[in-house]
Structures are given as structure tokens and as C-alpha cells.
Image 1 (cartoon, helix red, strand yellow):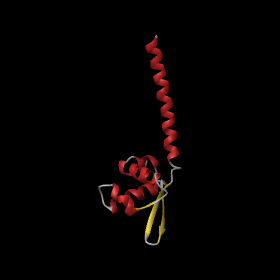
Image 2 (cartoon, rainbow, N blue to C red):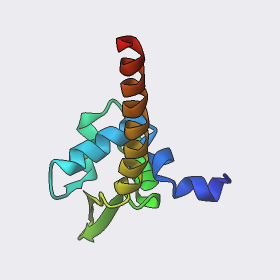
Image 3 (cartoon, rainbow, N blue to C red):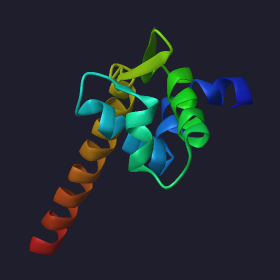
Image 4 (cartoon, rainbow, N blue to C red):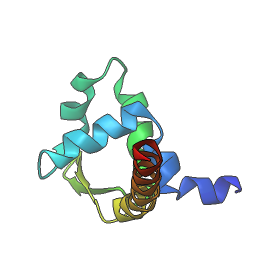
Length: 106
């Protein structure tokens, strides 16, 4: 996978704990400006803004300008890819656990 592909990869975007926390914060509200998101982290506005940019490149965050302020909101649709991936492995591990249970009961 090259760098261009990674920029739009949902899995790359959610790999970072800071970005996962941003997603969680945005999921709890309709939208928030940068100055309301920044206090939740031990980093400056520039660093939080960079994380938001990565989420935006993966289409997980949508922003809009209101005057001089930029407000951010979650676009959860790309997370369906993650859910689908996890569902496959949940089924895989459930089948393996059932097989192990059957072996142990013999």
C-alpha cells in the first residue's frame, strides 16, 4: 500500500488512540470547533488539527466554516468497513471456540 492509499484508509486513520478519541468525542455531539476539542488532549491545537486532517482524509470527519471558526462532525459511514472486517473475524473465532468446546467435551 502506498502513501496515497494510506491517507484514505480508515484502518490507518483509526489506528491512533488520539484519533479514536476524537471520533468518540464527535460521536457524542453534532459538531464541535477545534477550541472545544483541544482541551481533551495533552497537546496543542496544531497537533489536534493534524489528527483531524487525517480523519478528514479518510472521510471520517466533515468540517464546515462558520465565520472564522471551523466546526467538525463525524461521518460514521466509512466505519462500516471496519465493522464488516470485525464481523468476519468474530464469526471465525466463534466457530473456533465452538470447535474447541466440542473437542473438550469428547
